[in-house]
Length: 276
Image (tube, rainbow, N blue to C red; front, side, top):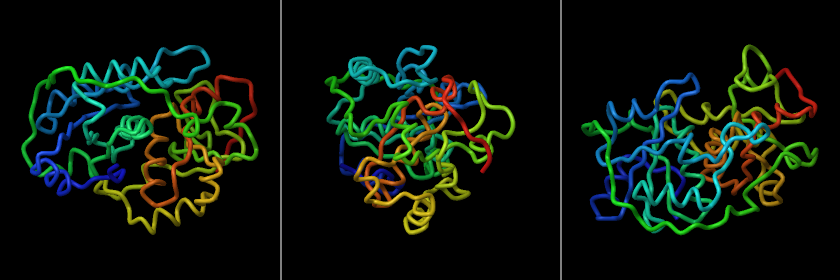
């Protein structure tokens, strides 16, 4: 299995060596802009577009959150249609430091499929961009269940023994200003670790020592991760994956994802907190 983050130089080495690497563009915008339109206007050569709303999420309900995980069969069918085989190495990117593309990478790695985020994203690419849609031949991707030890649900997130690490911007965690979800604030006892602060101004991952200290300050330790006590949350289970990949890269282990995240929790009548 590759490291969770891959540099452009390392990507070139793999492609030059003839490894079966599939590039995946997974741009998505909370403000409603079209990730697909951004992809069509310019993407890494050969990259397919993976849609967070349709390829990486299942059907929404009143209490599912905005991006519930798809079933094993739905996800396998989406990957197959896109030409991604479960024997491929997938390198995904976006234009936001990897916080959106992290969803695809986490989902694949959770199933044992080799995948990594391109450090620096599309802006780090040192070659020409291509336009238009890339269509690959359908590939073999066998359905496999989501590992229960890597997932948390609403009750887990509300359990006082669990430390919820919230990847949203600090102002949304605090309940300041408008929120796309039913209520503003955070799960009681949660720690704010905004995922966009895992990267520098060039959208590249911060030094691992810096990241370890950042998560340690929030209460994340390898021991707590190993015990299943650390749960990663965000607005809808997308950017939470960036914190998960970052923790893994920093040697803290593989914590759990709460797919429903704040968009599910806020739709219930459970208590909330505000403030930083």
